[in-house]
Amino acid sequence: MRAAESYLNAEVGLRSWFFTTDHKRIALLYFASITFFFFVGGIAATLIRIELITPGPTLGSPDVYNRLFTMHGIIMVWFFLIPSIPTTMGNFMIPLMIGARDLAFPRLNLLSWYFFVAGGLLTIAALLFGGVDTGWTFYEPYSTFYANGYVILAVLGIFVSGFSSVLTGLNFIVTTHKLRAPGLTWYRLPVFVWSTYATSLILVLATPVLAMTLILLLVERLFHVGIFSPQLGGDPLLFQHLFWFYSHPAVYIMILPSMGVISEVVPVFSRRPLYGYKFVVWCSIAIAMLHQTTNL
Image 1 (cartoon, rainbow, N blue to C red):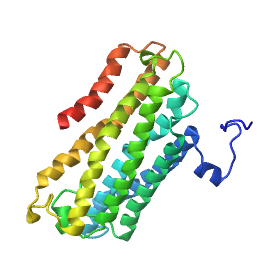
Image 2: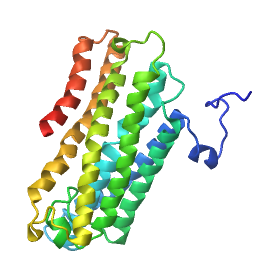
Image 3: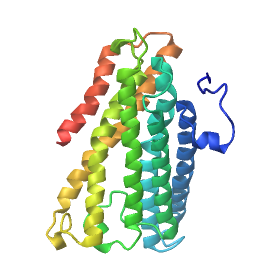
Image 4: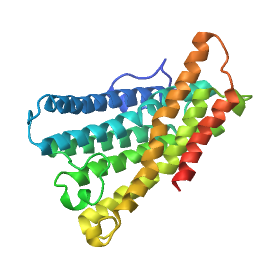
């Protein structure tokens, strides 16, 4: 009988990495991908600052500045800030913290990484072909009638990466419910597991709304169906409401895992137990759920 693959007996080579189902390796794949996108967004930010050195044009026209500003925002928000801690530390640490061999759906975990990379490459393709000048929020009616960049390609990239967020959040939720070690009750879970669980609730509940909004934007831009643009009888405020149904809770996708990390690190190095463990736990869950219900 063949022993289960682990870091002790795993094969080497690119093929072994690209087809792995080991949560630790997938976490490292995410780490490498996110670092790459961080540098791409950082280059855009550097060019923005160079442009702002002088009052007049430094690198190009105001349109070039708008495109740099947009691509910096898109890459940093959807391909660095939101996936950073859940997909790297979450993938690596959650099974180890709850005594599980791996996440509940290892193949879906690998598939989520492929979705993430595919979405990022589509977005970078939009950058290389000429960029987008709408701002990272794609506000209507500008993104439908007035923008002359590769809006469709950039929106499609964000849409594809949304599948990665949903699959990752679903994996963490099922893993936390079903794969805890015997005797590891809910109130014995590390705070980082709780914060990642709360983040996963936001990912699963809010990301489909963003996906639906982006699909409607594409339909309007491609087929001129009146949904958001006043020129076609649509309502631009509808776009804002749907977009911020995701983007407001997205702030807590960024901060909740960070709070979990701090709540683990500080007690260890201070050699004191975390004060108010249950309060911290339920505050994390309340933050996740209240921002969904208030958006409704």
